[in-house]
Amino acid sequence: MTFRIGQGTDIHRLVEGRKLILGGVEIPWEKGLLGHSDADVVCHALSNALLGAIGEGDIGQHFPDSDPRYKGATSTTLLQVVMALVKARGYRVGNADLTILAEKPKLAPYKEEMRRNLAAVLEVEPTAVNIKATTGEKMGFVGREEGMMAEAVVLLEKQ
Image (cartoon, rainbow, N blue to C red):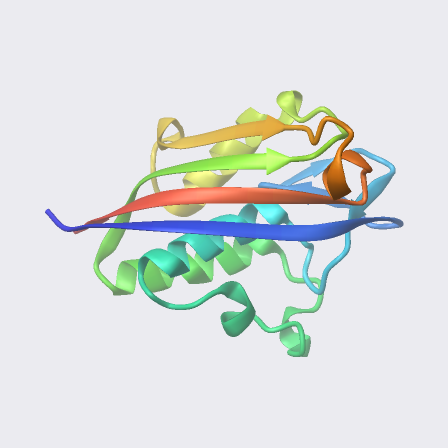
């Protein structure tokens, strides 16, 4: 069996007046992530990992912020487009492991819903998706609550 591994990272600035969407889940909080789309760093990092695994660049190439079609786009929809590319190359997701770096809010109550959302898009069982969250321990842009970051690693298997 042929395997491919991909790694992805995404960062967005936190601002007032935006919804906070992570892993396709709207999380009630006073700030949200700034971006051309809904700025879901979790879906963006996962999309980048998938694109990397199949050698297809990154989401900036596929969904540029200069293209008005993606203004306000739902990142789970963009992830579905990326998954179509993965499947067209003859691969399926073996598993995905994600880490969210956010000082606040606490994400534990939302991780299971994120996991289910992502598993549905990736067409895998929820146990094939792992989501972890950590803080910046008050250091750096994450610790100062200036932004959030997500990292993802995926394993693809040839179908």
